[in-house]
Length: 284
Image 1 (spheres, rainbow, N blue to C red):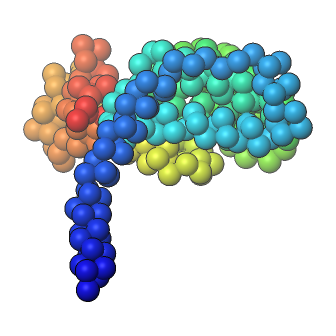
Image 2 (tube, rainbow, N blue to C red):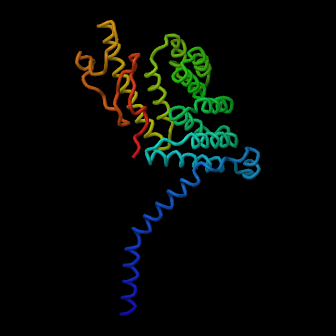
């Protein structure tokens, strides 16, 4: 009987301790992440190759998983990683693709997060050039490079050149060459962004990155709706609308679309659509 009561007491104490231990575990996890996320720069490629021996493929997978964990943690916390964290992400992606240049997922991840999240476009382009050399069987490295120069840098001539290279790769859709031919029109920036996001969403396997891309696509769709109304207003009135509310009053826009990032859309001084959220998640 005493043994039974003792067992029940131990079980009761254990049950009461579980929530406390769980809270402490999450606190410890948070402290560990804060202390280690960006403080350890990667070793040189030579050191990594020497230390991983013939297991470079498995090592590349593990290091890439670590990179996704750091970025994923920031997404969970709804915060923008620091400049140092983004640089850490790039350096590790560079090492991962040095170990296994044909490993495609890190290149897609770089295009999905480095170009949109921070001023890391040159680093993303360097990785894509590496991918273009290592993966002659894929059209997407040059396609992504073409998009980056078109959408972010507005360098239409360079963008068209990359798209022409992409069109010559195996499996390239026929519309890529048509898109290259139309780059000189200097238009369709938002729709080009949606086209790229559709491609990234199809090829991204990480659920958190995919969710982030889907939200960005939703934001660009809202921008496209407003831009269409602005263009119609200019054709009718011969000027830009004063604000988005004028588009609603004119009947060209049924209502102001919601910003999935929690901000508010507005027109800047040049009549372009922007948002107070800067396409970044609100901090919790």
